Amino acid sequence: MTEMTAIVTAPQPPSDVNKRSLPGSILVHALLIGGSLLMLYPLLWMVSASVRPENEIFTSTSIFPSSIDFSSYLRGWVGLDVSFGRFFWNSLVISVLTVVGNVIACSLAAFAFARLRFAGRNFWFAIMLGTLMIPYHVTLIPQYVLFLNLGWVNTILPLVVPKFLASDAFFIFLMVQFFRGIPRELDEAAMMDGCSAWRIYWKIMLPLSLPVLATAAIFSFIWTWDDFFGPLIYLNDMNTYTIQLGLRTFVDSTSASDWGGLFAMSTLSLVPVFFFFLFFQRLLIEGIATTGMKR
Amino acid sequence: MNNAMRTMPAEAATVERYRGAVADSRFRRLWNANAPGYLFLLPWLLGFFGLTFGPALMSLYLSFTDFDMLRSPGWVGAANYVRIATADPKFASAMSVTLTYVMLAVPFKLAFALMVALALNRGIKGLPIYRAIFYLPSLLGASVAIAVLWRQLFAGDGLVNAALAQFGIQGPSWISHPNYSIYTLVALSVWQFGSPMIIFLAGLRQIPQDMYEAASLDGASKFRQFYKITLPLLTPVIFFNAVVQTIDAFKAFTPAFIISGGTGGPINSTLFYTLYLYQEAFGNFRMGYASALAWILVIIIAIFTAFSFLSSRYWVHYDD
Image (cartoon, helix red, strand yellow):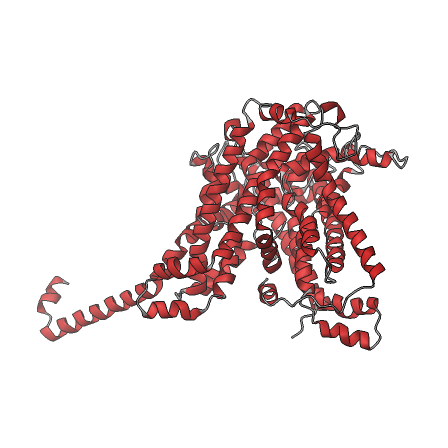
């Protein structure tokens, strides 16, 4: 991963060595456009299914509905005992708190690893990298027992508190990489002038690190929004459900009866992710390219 | 001690005090040098001991017990592991489903990712748009909505069969047929080839263009250039993508859970390892047994990773 980061920071301009003949390039574009349509087709079909009259959903493979009808959204929204508004709100609270927790806790740890000298730093850094490789299944059951004993099951605490303890070590790693790229002269000079570590972190490091903080925040939000496993384990009361659990319940309880409502709510559940994608595409893609983030 | 202090000569008392002061300042110096680091690290340290290290030890212990959440854990020695290895047909089928999934999904995903990355890396017009479109499914893919959609696409009366019908092909009910259900999940994973594709694109841009210029002056064909330049220079990126995607595939959960309604059916054909672990832990409350399953998963992932790193010596080229 380190290697990749180093490589990608110095991108080359695309060369024109590979310039194609006209027919060749038309062929490539045709293939790419075909591929793009194939990639988007399921998504477009879902969106169109959500605005189709119910009787038309499965009779047509076209993505253009014959008439547009938003009643599925209304039906879906109130289709369960608890309305989808509640699920959206719960997801939003958990996701926003996760973002805050990850950004604060991970940047604190990353600052220590990247910039402070203290006994045992390399040891702890190695341990932190080691935790990146441990699948969460190993800690799953004792963590569950712990949170159950604390009386936290059916609250958002098991999903949020660990983030304030920097449990997503991946973001620490990401920030360490970024912090190391900031010129050392800056904080050495500040240290000479008697700046405390805290002030260096707060006044110098964080303002200069907005790109990496934003990347971590956006991925935190999207992954938490999409997370199914955590809520599945910790949230059993429908009032505490997130949007993912709500959708799953909707599938189970309506099976084959209200497909329009299901696709309407599915579409809505993707809206925040799609929104982030539209606005922060560059950051997301750079984040993937430089660090190899999964998904 | 008190007596000794009282009778201590004045000089000795001074030396003693001096030593104290030295120790004190040494402590202060140690404190000053290290405290900020540890204070910044405090949240992470708490998380590490409380949520990672402690629970990992606990889970190792539980894996040797019959813990069921109701009674306190009773030591059963290696019984869980013995049962996993010899007497659990569900473990065997979960393992084989997962291995099938890993072996199919990862290579296909990487192949598509590389193919599209190569097509996009020719200074093509509209690159950002194509890249965005191909990446989008990767970003959405982890959500329940996509799994729900997939279930519908491959249902008996779903879109895939409707499309096949136009060519006169009568498709099976993919999701509910044990011979095909796993392939729908493989297809879902392959559809999400966007993030390895972006990493391939980044890797391709690092290959020095003058190598191609030299090669084409020497009359090397495009295919030869790909085979002799692109592929070898890309092996570190291929390796990286393969390891990341393999580990990720071992951990897949949501699609199998949603598409099979949590059962791993039909006939365990989509019983992913993580799904089986979940069923044992939170369905049957066999927490001890599930802990053993978790450790087996760790060992298997570790073996795969170690094997990848060992094999990488023979096929990954670092230019140093």
